[in-house]
Image (spheres, rainbow, N blue to C red):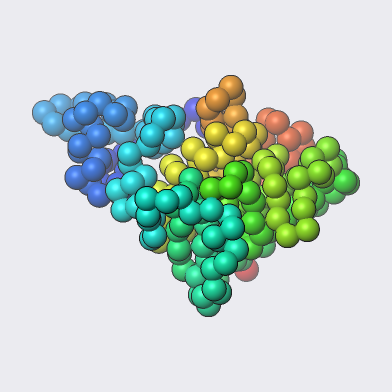
Length: 255
């Protein structure tokens, strides 16, 4: 894990979070996100610090900037979700009562997911033969109004009771999300807050475009980053002994 914290501009921050620059300026003025003032209205930000600040907000207003695709006064439930007609090329989730709709993952996303899944399966087969690694699409329910489909997830052998016939009903030990170019804000903020609240011990975010991996672990009620890397780095996780992830093998150029 690198101790270096890179400073980025408001425009870069907005792009990484899937927000408008105007929203970043507004949250800066309202002191809702941490920032460093370099001079006369020259502001810089640390991505992880901003994410932590936003994800710990009790009612995170940022995630409502564009909102879910479908919203109503009545919360959308798992029962409603099961009645949805299939729509080719799209996937649905229910995030705290709001139904969201996004295009299905692209080829690069699938390649990265498959390569990371192989690494995780090989590792957990050795240390926890009773555990299982699953990939999307597979429903994970945290409540009647929250249904997610993580890109990858690991269920420890001691958790097998949460594996049901058609879904995972409870919190996996590890959840991995591979950022979508359509809505990075959802994984970095909204779903991070959901996983945090649900007690998912480990949450990893993979960004194929920036070629980065960020590993968060739950300490108390909040996530803290415990390992990270980019490009050709090898990430070693402090909580998973002898797990090494050579990032260079994940990216499409490694094909």
